[in-house]
Image (cartoon, rainbow, N blue to C red; front, side):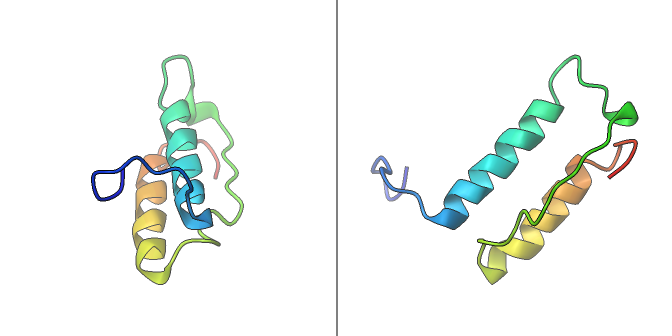
Length: 70
């Protein structure tokens, strides 16, 4: 939703942000052993604006801090 209207076309940055959130949600699911996992994230913020880059990095870092290897 954007301004109380359903969004039909997402920007590249919005699609990237949703993909990151989906990935981070999947690794939090039951059955995924994050402590024994290798997590590779390649350039997750390339299409985000400058205001979102720092927030995204902090969120990602906190979400995967318990991974066996990053």
